[in-house]
Amino acid sequence: MAAKKARKPKQLKATWERGYNGHSLWQGKNRIGKVTVHASKDAKHHASKDAHHKYTWQAAKRQGAADTLERAKKDVEFAALIADKQRDLFE
Image 1 (cartoon, rainbow, N blue to C red):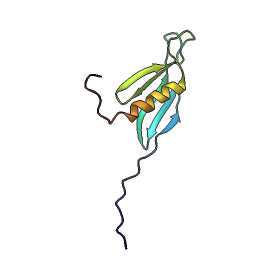
Image 2: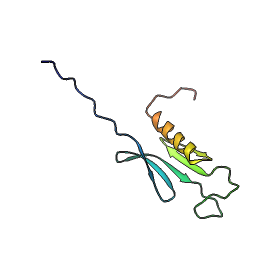
Image 3: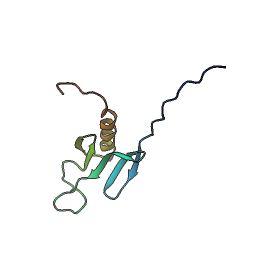
Image 4: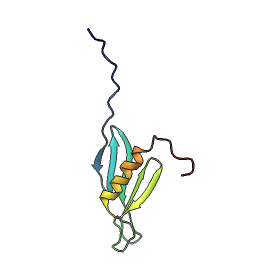
C-alpha cells in the first residue's frame, strides 16, 4: 500500500462581480481588486464623452486608468497576480 501524499489547499479561483458603479474581483470572501467608472465633475456617475480615461482600477496597492472595461479588468488581474512576488529593486 502506497503512502498518500499531502495535498496543498486548493487556491480559490478569482471571480468578477458586477456592482453599482463598477466591477470587483473576489477571491473567496476577499476583494482583491476593483474597477469603477471614472466620475467626471459634471456627471454624477459617468465620465464625459471627452474624458481621457473612462475607467479607474485599484488592486494590490496599485492603481491606474483605462479606456475600456476589458483593459481595466486585465490590469487588475495582472496586479493581483504579481502582488505576492518580489519586485525589482529599481522598478
